[in-house]
Length: 297
Image 1 (tube, rainbow, N blue to C red):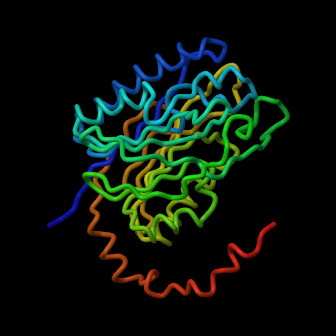
Image 2: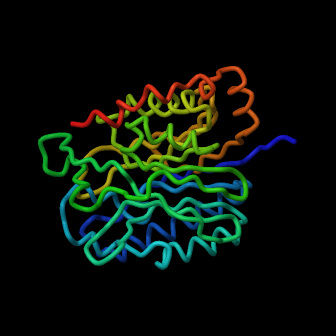
């Protein structure tokens, strides 16, 4: 029996000015995303992934304690609870990237995974945290160490109603070890919710992740927010969310400039077909790979 799964990726502009209160940002973004989730459901999506910290601007363009107010408990916060109801209503798995508070003063960049019956399955916390200036202005950087502690939950694989899935977040995609671990643990689809601007790594956007799909022989779903956010104007979030198959071929792609619900059908049987041709897992020699972790700088 063929195992085909319809997957939706939601990319959305955030147009509330950064000086507005945090709750105004969250309310506007959540209302917008609820409509887009419905649109995904109307297109019979079975798994839907939102963009990195979907319920506001990508505030890491500045270092401001104001944005700590955006953090919520996972899974016991209001946004995850709301998305549990949405998942059950649409019969849809939803990946919910969110700003998480663990204990007072300890925050993570997190993605909650909710099954199609509304059950919370678990979470992934972003492991690699960048802190980089991209230009001369103080608003042209990703000052993430101000906001996030590095993730400590490893690389979980979630058994959902429709597929085994893994998650890594934005900057994690530049490190090949995580996608390999997810592949070894059985992930059939790996999701990467991101917030990435043109001029920094756009040329890598369609290079690295198809390479992960080929090396690990699974599907990759890459989600990037879209638009320019004020007052920072740090650059254009270039959208271009896409679905990629185990041969490295892009099978559905979103707009570079506009809101989009990117929907595609993934045939999970293709994983076995490709693995039976390219025997990367059979031919691995892990006994020679210990230097990867033994060498540290």
